[in-house]
Image 1 (tube, rainbow, N blue to C red):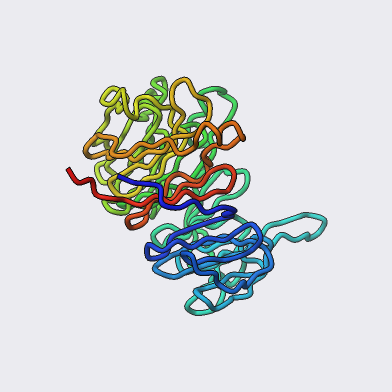
Image 2 (cartoon, rainbow, N blue to C red):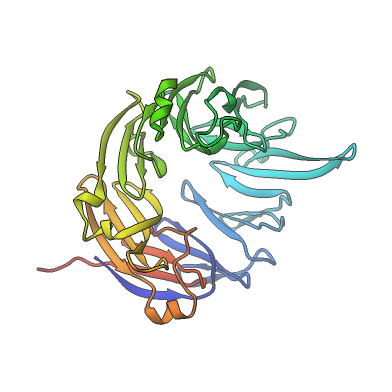
Length: 353
């Protein structure tokens, strides 16, 4: 079980690096666990980690910090795998355009000889781009050459309006030769990573089966689990496991029916897949604030931890849990951020019977 051990106030952003807590405050101070690190930027920055490396990036454009060595790229907007994403917004011929590129941290140079005009997302070494509005997705080579493009107009219109084409919501990941994405029309779509051709579509709308789409009861929050390379989904009612190799639903059940007195009491507001668990934030029946957090073991089909994080007194002050920060597990600790920028640090302790 997890017990509350510490409450850290004024947390702007946080991440975990080798099971250590790394966070920044709204006044720009930087901490690794409880040790303050000399500031590198004037403004609060976001913390990220990848392959045991620590990154900071400043949203106002001062640069990126790799471990303790500053990389001053004023156009930096984030870190993906071994690349720093750069974003330039400029005006040419009376037209505002975006230009994106990737700065290779190891080679210390930009990847693409010519910047791209579409957002870049990296998955399993694939460079995937999408425009705004998100009407298509493309794959490009390491030189920036387009390899294919998939237009979401190929799908049926969204279910609520026959005149509205579907659009990209999120790129989930790459597995078994397919790029997996979710759409604003509530679909889960597999696109061939080599050709850009449509592989399969999952939908929650029964009428869309006439298009050859496979029907589910609602996918909710969708994740590709790196441990097994399969899709795991958790909605307010259902759990789904979709086999990315066979393109079929391997497992499906309603967890509210299994545990009406545990997770079944809640309206789920956010989840995060972490190995064999979904952590979640929820609103209990009869309440209106997001006060509760829990851990659900989808293999055991059981809630293994449930806790009311926000007290009645804090609710009266207008506080609740931050929907943008689902509970994060790291080592024997669990981190939960609330709306008032407090970071609740829980620690796992074995129950002695």
